[in-house]
Image (cartoon, rainbow, N blue to C red; front, side, top):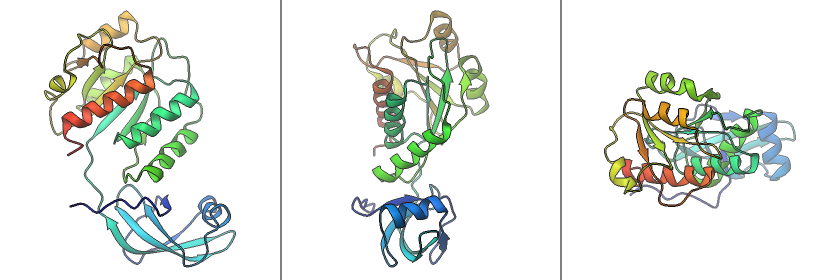
Length: 249
């Protein structure tokens, strides 16, 4: 049985190699967060992860207002093998985009790819803020993998983008026949990445829809008889793909 997730300890993402006995010197921002915001003192314990080496128990070995050092004592959880699921989404307004990104992290997406369509009304102007949102979601919900945030691409470039990675495509299509999406998703090829494509507010136009449906192996699915908001559709689609791919077993 896998170890239970500790939801009571403070968790911190640190992009440094981790091993038993390692010392991690924190940058100014993380030092400020632990020492000045959380008011941790020397000897305090916390959990740390880097998205590659599992989850570790750490002690705050030394701390001042400008510098802090952690000592890793034991690994609590091994790094799990994750299903390689990408979320391709048309950027939406800030609050809804934050929600979509947070839930994609919780649902186990490994890569987030903004896709600019004809009806996209928002651009990703501050990817650093969105990246911080991704890390914060991983820290809070106990996951060990931190999705990559890719640079924005235009929909016309998506076929080449997916072909380069031999990536299957699940097209969340409100015009697809309403049927059992799990039954359709079980036909996805195993072993390679799977991209889930969510449209913008207002959906794809006719030319865009024809382009997507022309892609080799594109699998259009409906998410039930209701029209979902883009952020809700992302959560529903990722849940269905994870269930079909075995990510919840």
